[in-house]
Length: 360
Ligand SMILES: *Cc1c(COP(=O)(O)O)cnc(C)c1O
Image (cartoon, rainbow, N blue to C red):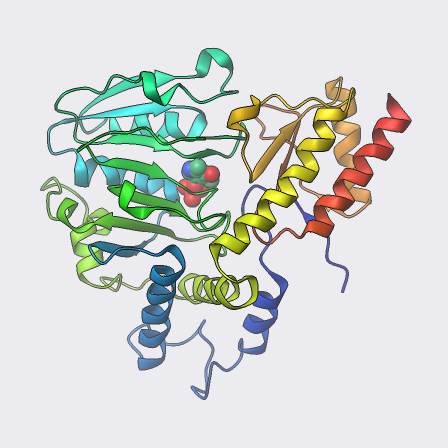
């Protein structure tokens, strides 16, 4: 087996022990005589899987009792609509735009009510996050929406905005489970699982109980939080295998890694390896402003687009794949999610040093 170091932004690497466990159980789960891929979602086997996955999520993320967890299809993008449909009771909400996904979320929400863009870093090419202490929230806004880690631009909030009594809603697709989170600071957290949790096909919503039950009457049942969560995410056939894989990854985080504080230490160490090298390099440049740098998605450029292209091609030949930046920004991006090992980041830095020496 020759596994590459996969720096894809998503779908992305999964921990090898998790893949091996899934492989070992693929044809027969437990003594069920069948695969998780085949079994009825109403079977006692699957009921146990989904209950365990939710319980693990609660433990690992330390989710308070007054928060509910739901598993949704349609990815994080479906949540761009679900959030306003369920939460925009006053007919308006505040959005902070720090990249492509928060822009899309705001655009989608504007179909259902008034969206106030209270800050944007578009003019800075999304290389930073607005000063959260200088924000003016709109009186009467139902919630404030942020994208906590900007997957494409490689930035993240160093500090959360203090929204007072107004619920803070965060898209955490590309940073969830990378470090401990104080869930009580948020009204709602959502994330697509294909970045740092599981294979593609699901989004998870963690929502404060009192925010449920206020959806617009025309909200599709599949996007209605009270409907889906009220049915324990079994309103219809859920993404069964994805839920199972999420459970395996959470077990890995808990038992192999030792929880989110330990995961954070690993991730900080990996990110420092790459950023320290970038800071000392006269060849590569890291566009994200230092204080807002993402721990998960590291963006960088070489002196020319031609060299960027050569870099990605050469890197792939050396088993370092998917380093091309997002098609909208170019350059390079190394996504170093939980499953990327320190060895993978070290191999990347060694390759960058050699490339720099050859082309500088
Ligand atoms: C990838 C991503 C999305 C889109 O996720 P889908 O599951 O493809 O809809 C949204 N927000 C962020 C922050 C992302 O990284």
